Length: 538
Picture 1 (spheres, one colour):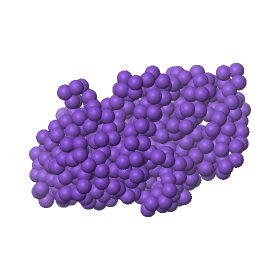
Picture 2 (cartoon, helix red, strand yellow):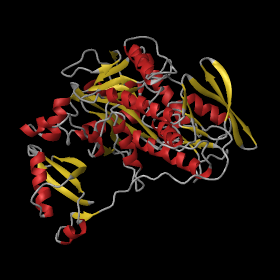
Picture 3 (cartoon, helix red, strand yellow):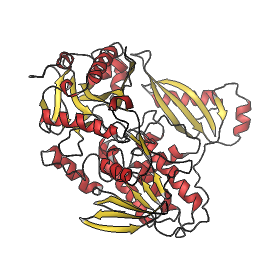
Picture 4 (cartoon, one colour):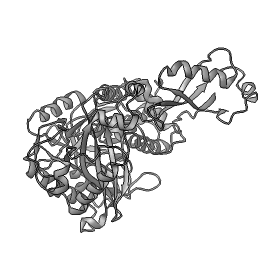
């Protein structure tokens, strides 16, 4: 393949200009067969906005063509295609169990199923169709189901978010492309294969997740929904059984290969594993609030007010700041044209998150503005102290908002007074909200850092610190406050236990979690023989 990097064309009429540039750079008289490898937006000279393309061209005599071109941005490359590892020789006595069907669990299961290992996927929540109804009922005011909600259920917490698929993880094995192609295969837009900041959207993720489940089942994988791991048996330092609470009944299932891909909100599972002496330790994480602005404000700040800005989707942003006291403050899980959602998973506790549909056409854009929380803030050296820290703040927010999303104007947040009346900006939420005092529920260092950070972000996005910007709390589920220890073979000190994904402390988003699930599956494949032969590697 010939790769052409850095082709810069105006957003207007971009396809025609792009093809002209391809022909010019390759000294061709007609447009060759090409594919977009990557596309990003350059708005540094707004209102003039450009697409930056990386293009792949496949044709005869590629080496000869390259020899006639003196351009460092034109080169021969080979795309890395993901390769399954060769299977090991150890006998697998039982089906591997995968606890959790978020991105880590699903992609671990997909690899194992496609290679003949017949995994059993254990999910405490419901299938995506039933989960969607459960979540919408909660938004409409029905009681929280602590086993099936925005955090728990098929697809994991990422299902009810923006479905962002960008990652900072470096990948030279083709895993990222494999994940993206799997999403496209099951209904995601093909643009995610090349967009610099790809996203799917909650509405489309529902279809994608169901499709991945069906593919896993087609290879023999089995899903157990409404099934929670409540206990494990360990003999001679090896896991032998898992006790499942399945449809209200306890059942022991034998397995000596158990992947814990539970997500960062499975607090009861963390406590169960701790009581079984599974090595783990507390780690730093981040907490804060959600902030909302009109999407048109963000669009103009990022892309200007020219005609080309109107051709682009709702604008994202990424902001970072270091406070005078050395705290990191940054935007997280930014949702262009999205909603703030009640993301609670425990009775008596309120957490919020952000969500966008594929069109990102909501009136507001929102983002978490979070502050680094250090282990020294926990006032405890217990491995699960971070969970207690999260719970205390979530409980305070719940009481202040009577279980609803607690909302405050930024000016009132700065002054530490309850909001009595909203101003120019109205909240856009999934789940009822109420006005109150978010700042009063947070530690002083967190409130002060958020204020300092938001005020500093005004320099980059005019209007960001507007007095009527809407603050919602609490954004507490950015990442796991726990890391379950594992070795270079992805195993815990207890043989057969594979800590995996975001909940175990090894990922931070859909893509990195899915990649970690693949790595764990690869480790299992390298050691064990398949349980069945797969004739068709669809």
